[in-house]
Image (cartoon, rainbow, N blue to C red; front, side):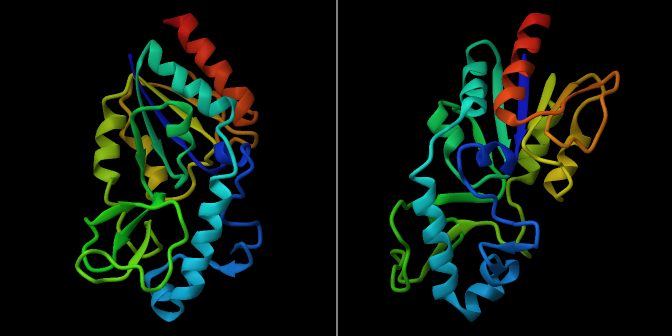
Length: 226
């Protein structure tokens, strides 16, 4: 069975990672556009680099939770693809082998000259860290105003799925929210969220709870039915 899992900040929050955007719209006390846009980087690159350096350090101090681990184990019985809005590596550390990061990856950087030059990076990134062509490196994060390069690939994956599981995301933020529209009419959808934005129906089963408790229940139900 082909299963696609769409994940968002809610699944990582249970590992202790702060969700970037707080209720007041700020990211760690910063205006979003100041730390997550090409314009912000051009205006104050040191601020932006420091912001992501702090996020990178924090990421290396947390671990996958029960939801990450349950999704990784799902691969033992099914063909599983994870499409995540998260920039952390918790899915990979849990053991998932097919993970598509829509918004980039915190532990990678790329050249400001050639976006296809991408490097693994676990330490702080500073001004003066250059690619081989001599251009400044930047976080490999999809910022506001930038295209989401993997959206087309993600849409194809969703369209071929027998089951779609949504965990830790309200599916209100576009373009990622639009992915569910590509699911076939025959695909079964499971939605795990403590404050779900949709209700259960013939096609959709909602688990109104946190990722770490709801995800194992979804997987148990899938394995029981199939």
